[in-house]
Amino acid sequence: MHQKRKTGILGIIITIIILILIVVFTNGENNASFFENVATKLVMPVQNGLTYLKNKISGNDAFFTDVNNLKAENEQLKEENSKLEQSLRELENIKSENETLKEYMNLTEKYGEYKTIPAYIINKDLSNYSKTIVINVGTDDGVQENMTVIADEGLVGYVVSVTNNTAKVQTIIDTATSVSALMSSTDESIVCKGTLDSMTELKAMYIPPEYNIIQGDSIETSGLGGIYPKGIHIGTVKKVESTKNVTDRYAIIETAVNFEKLSTVLVIQN
Amino acid sequence: MKKFLINIYLIIIAFVIYFLQSNFFNWFTIAGVMPNLFVIFVLFIGLFGSKIMGTIYGMIIGLILDVLFANNIGISFITLGLVGFASTIFDKNFSKDSRFTIMLMVAGLTIFYEVIFYFANYFVSSSSIEIISFIKILLIEVIYNVILTIIIYPLMQKFGYYIENEFKGNKILTRYF
Image 1: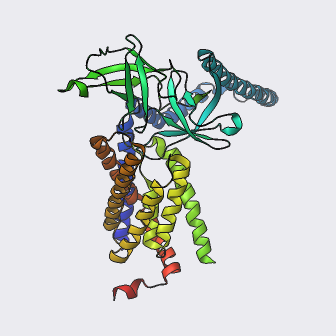
Image 2: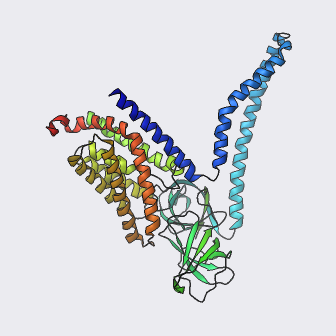
Image 3: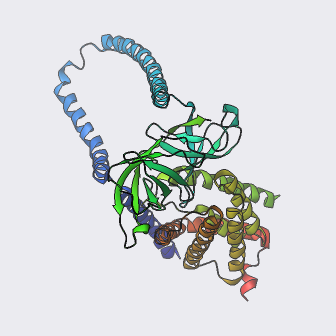
């Protein structure tokens, strides 16, 4: 019985380790730096201790000279230190506030012709198959259904439902949405849909056979459909997939907005 | 009184799971795929709680998820309710003492839940259908859920039998003889 329980716990620990390893390896762009970090964290305390010892021994002769003086000085320095720390904290607060304000300013400057409401993302969808987000403004701030949501880089999505203080936004990478778009160089209209397996790509479909699609061309909203205003940047053409049937061909579009790191958005008031 | 307390515990656990799912598992993912803790939780209640508890908890949790995230109310409500109902059926027909059976149940119910959820969403919101990427995500999700079940199984069993004694009486032995 005891033996069995022991192996059970061992099994659980091994599973946890395997899980963590899988998570690290499947998500990593910076695996190397992760392991570097772990290694430094393991080694650094010992290293620090050794250095401390070495310094202590080499500076040993001056240790007993002026203990009283040193104590007084120490007190004074401590006081000074706490004061400095306080002011530092205040400064840091001001700095972060300044940064967010600047971010808002930039955002609003870029889309100056629209009246906008700034908002933070407070929640992301829990399921793997839909990509809605929740933002921290609602009817109290003047947000209504079907308003367009943008970020600094481009289009994010539109508001599907609102409460007093929050709003649900359906992003353009959700598979249930499609955006009518224009290619900037040729003014040809296409329809962009979200895909299931990518957070950064859209699929442009219904491309008429006579149209030319150019790689690297930028894509903007066309204003058709009544939700999105005209001329908001969506992304760039990443590659064109041609199939046997010309009417079936599609293009992959890389979104300008990085949805994984998105944290502040703007809601355009109609 | 004790039953009331157990219900309070379950509600607290539901909240903890919600916050885990929305914060921790949002970045602790396998290749960008999150696990689905709600299915495990509803299965757990269905297995160890009283006859209707699984279904009721499934429906309530589903309703809350619908209100919070979905565009149309009803899909998670029905699917999680079905998961709860299925787990009460499992309770009648299978033994809960083996880790392996529970793992199989979790895998089966995750597939059941996600397939219904995906296709219901497809019919309601007319999104384009992508079978291959759907299956890929589903498989990773099932594996993730099973791994989590292995880890939390001892906890599940301990708390589960505590609940079962309260709701069904101590019938564990008599049922098998």
